[in-house]
Length: 198
Length: 358
Image (cartoon, rainbow over all chains, first blue to last red):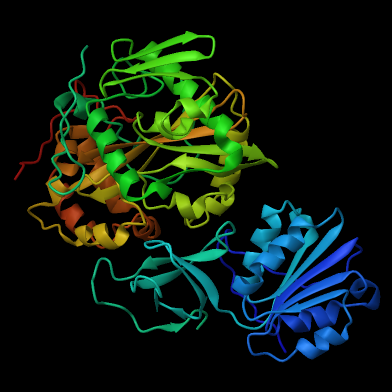
């Protein structure tokens, strides 16, 4: 599957690379949906002997192939929120030399990266690779509610109902892009929603 | 001189007003008849008598009412004041800097009595007389940064310095030009400035950061920045934009002079002694177009700057739709005469406006 090329944007917008195998005392790999393919591409038997894979399928069917890699620990869960405590513990228990591999949607990579930073994992030990959905995790600047998997611009806040313009401004602390009311100066004049990258 | 504090509002009925004294000392931000971004830094070591540059933290006639407005904003949205856990010491540094500066610069308004770590702070305009133990948070009603910034005009960003960068790790932000502390908290200098157009390409932020990283204790710096705001609204936050944005469409040719305000930020930068953090106060001064045009030099120059500003900047600053109406208003005053260099009003030397005022 070809990878999506994000257009050039402002400095706060994250950029992603391609996972590569690294030497490490342990390997924590977190992926959602087709992000599994990036793990399959980078996995080696040596790495798997010390690997903990956390996978959120979101309907994709890579679970059996990841499990077949025979990682030291494997977990599959229904959502990032469901896996959050497990991920926090994995980072909390981490020792020097941990390598972190994140792949899949921006929302899952962003949240996992935030958890890693909170635990003091150096950013040089974290790799990311975008795969699959280009939908965004958005924070409504007005009500502060976060909406997962926003694919269109503008979109309606799932919490307060305001119509929001999807900005490229991104907060690593919140692991979210910012949504700002689009019709504040002309109430009711909401352009038709398009795909964010259309 | 004894300051008289205005009883005024920055919302609803907008009773905010500037006295003649306030107009004379207004920080007009344009030193020539055009504007482009620059790293316009200078030392913050006083300035002309009674100017806004004279004291380290200027206290003016709007003080008490501005603090009342801040308290309302914080009651509605406590996330406008946040401090990441490692920033508490910088908060104490800031409290000390402000208390020492204000008690020395305005001894008739503020007193600081120190006996070891036992401190007593008297703020007469706000009717505060508190005794506390320095560096003991439990002895203050708020954290140190929040405590002192509830008593000091202007927004405050407290920036941690590490990895050759500055990090927005604490702040009290209630009079901002449309940016969110809650969103930008934890970002570095380049990240929080990411949405600003044109300035990155001009290398402005790289040079500004280099300058700021090297600011030393006792050698603060300052610069002016500006935007435009309809109505004297201090809280032009993104959080409340869905409420105040509509006001931008409320001007008519008859009301533009009274409602359109030039919003000037006096930005200062102080190194803090214990934490090595940098505090970045952003003090907001507001003045209506009709008051600005009472000063002939400023009337001429404001018209020329607004007229010639690149569309990209007018869009970013949020006034491109209202620009034609502003120019219709301001062109009435511009007689085409040359203006003197520098920001000062030069009331004694600049000729009166030659155009007949409507």
